[in-house]
Each structure stands twice: as structure tokens, then as C-alpha cells.
Image (cartoon, rainbow, N blue to C red):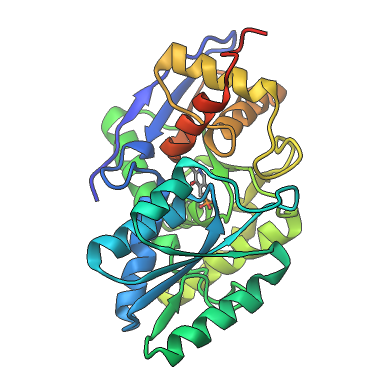
Amino acid sequence: MIHTPIQKLEFPNDRNVRLYCKREDLLPFSLGGNKVRIGRAFFRDMQEKNKDCMIIYGNSRSNLCRVLANLCCAEKIPCYMICSSEENEEQPIETNNSRLMKWLGAEVIPCRKTEIAQTVEQTMNRLTEEGYHPYYIFGDKFGTGNEGTPVQAYVDGYREILAWEKEQNISFSHIFAASGTGSTQCGLVSGKLLEQGTEQIIGLSISSREYDRAIRIMESGISDYFAKNHLVLPEGWESELHLEMGYRQGGYGQYDERILQVIREEFCRNGLPLDPTYTGKAFWGMKQYIEEHQLQDCDVLFIHTGGTPLFYDCILNDTDGGKK
Ligand SMILES: *Cc1c(COP(=O)(O)O)cnc(C)c1O
């Protein structure tokens, strides 16, 4: 995997906080993003388990589904997407990602959020009857058992950051990233534990998952990864999991004008494409956090986790361009 650039951003503030951004959105496959690294980890796992078709789960905004469908399409592996809609949606909405899924030829199986396990099971059974050996990325039908697999992606990502810090003689006090499934955060934290890093890694929740459940899932991801790789977790490692729940604005995909303003501002100021579901929400949350915790005289890293198609969804829907 190539190293993505880390760039200094224009970040006007009174307390000498210097802000940097790791551009994971520039990874050179399928419009980039953290899901390129994570998707490749799942794809490799499928191959190692000798499976010959892929079942993925997500909603119409899912970047992971786009990247996995793209990998499958390129490698001629049949790909099935179980697609849920949010409670407030009648059916899955159309987005740039859902349109790309059609190009990529993935079969989309719509499903209610309450019927995921059942739909996964039915799809696994159907494909098995057809003679396939299906692989479901999240493990069993309840979505557990494969938490360790994507962790390596951001152990590698963390090591890239560490190498950059050494080379530039800069040491980050904080690393911020949007946290959804928690895979990215698990990888960063595992990397920090393995390399004895000093940064505070802060996940900004963008999902509807409750705190306890989100933490439990990350704990099993990290312990699963360490166990699989015959590594020993240091005493008290759980205290490295920092997840901020206060900037979710009502849950997954929900946002208000404050987030849209940050998105327009960052594009104008730094040429940075952000979106309201993931990176824009996280960037806004990070700015709030920096104010609320009065961070000062420090170097802070924001990980741009990608989602370029959602940036274009955002422009398309922002019909008044901020001029109300
Ligand atoms: C999936 C995703 C996230 C969240 O990453 P997790 O590893 O699921 O926590 C953040 N940003 C973007 C753009 C994503 O697609």
C-alpha cells in the first residue's frame, strides 16, 4: 500500500493548535478512503478461506460496499449486497455509491434493519444451494466473529503516521478520526499499543450505535486481532479507547447547518472535500472538541477517511449553496 500524504491545513485559532490531515481519501483505488485498506483486508481473508463469492452488508451510503464490489468486479468474484434502509426511509435512497453499485454489477438485496440476520442466512443458504462457497464479511449472521480481520489495515496506517512523525520531527498529541464500525480506530489503537505510541487516539462517533455496544465491539476487535497474531495485550489497554458520542447530531446520516458550514469552509480554505455523514461530521466534532478541551500548543492529526462520492452527493443536495 502506498503511503498517503499528510498535509498541514490552514487552521486559524488563538491557541497555537497546528492541524494536519492524512489524506486517506487519496488512496488510488475506487475513489479512495479507509475502506480501500479495510476492503482489501476482507478480500484477502475471503481468498485465504477459499470462498468464491462475497456477501456484504451496508446501506446506500456505504463506502465499504462500493470498494468491495469494485474489488469483486475486478477479480470476477460474484458480489451480493444486503442493503438496509434507515428507520426514517421508506426504501434505500439513491446516492452516488448506490449508483456505482449498479455499474459494478453487485446484486442488491434490500432489507429492513430488523431483518438483517435472517436475510444474511437466507442469502448464504441460497448461494450454498447454487454450489457456491459464500463468504460473509462480518462473520456469522449476527455480524460477529470476524472483528479482527480489518484491524491490520490501520495497524499499517498507524505505522505510516509514526514514520512520518519521526521523519518530520513532529509528534502528534491527538489523532482524530470518524468512528463507525470502529475498524479504523481498532487498527490505530492496536498500532499504538504495539509501537508504544504517545498520541491520544480519539474516535468521533458518527453512527447510531450506543456507547457500550460500540466499545464492546472495539474491545473484541482488538483482542481478536492480538490473539490471532499471537501478540500480548499490555495491562490496561482498554483505557486507550476514547470514543466521543457528543457530536452525532441525532445519529447516523443526520446533520444540520453547522456541519454544512464546516464542509463549505474547509473546501474554500483548504480545498478539502468533506461529507455530512462521515468526515464533515467528524471534522466539526474535532473542532468542537479542540474548543471544549482548550487544546493548545500542539500538533493534531485529522484522518480524512474518504467518502468522495458523498462529497458530490452533498454538493448536489446543497441547492442554496449556503446563501439563505
Ligand atoms: C466507514 C467510514 C468511516 C468509519 O470507519 P470505521 O472503520 O467503520 O469506524 C469513516 N469515514 C468514512 C468516509 C467511511 O466510509
